[in-house]
Image 1 (cartoon, one colour):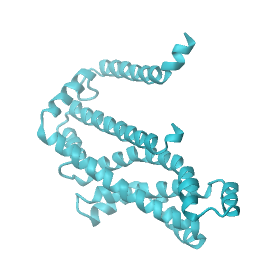
Image 2 (cartoon, one colour; image 1 turned 180 degrees about the vertical axis):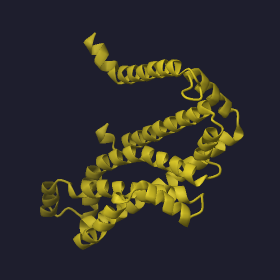
Image 3 (cartoon, one colour; image 1 turned 120 degrees about the vertical axis):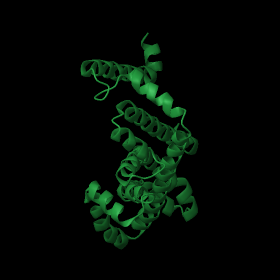
Length: 253
């Protein structure tokens, strides 16, 4: 019995948590008694199926996903480049440290409001997400690089291992687990920032705009249906990251 439980615990625990959340949702919706305050799961999923029938629903999802992937890819690429250079050149690290601290310390709402003044509504969400996500990716990448086992680095130098082999067989395998952990944790956050920014920027062809219109018309079931879609997309992005990680780091499977 115990062996069977251990075998399926990765399925049992998530299903148990989902059942608990669903039961709590049903109970609170019944206590509220008004769909405008908290709709029932039935009302939400009915609205969700209605959204599925609208062609613009898929257009909004596509554009929001594109903004998410473009902003995240740009932040990750710059983080990889600057963190690598910072690990090699201490003066560059010292130069970038106050800039990274400034980006991390600036209130998110300030970044959003300023970006909405400076940029077009289609570009602003990507710029906002980039500025918020970049410092976290930079810090994770830099930390992973400087925490590579120094004894292995010294041993490689003693045995005159080429720089190419050190990069491919020591640094990259050592850095990738921490990097993928950071990517997995931040890519869903990136999506949430994009959607929130789309709401404030009133970006056309976006999930944020769909949510805002639902709120304006007090269509709470539709608003929660959009929320369900956002949760599913976040889960899919994290799952995709995990799949890529397992295919890249086969030795860690």
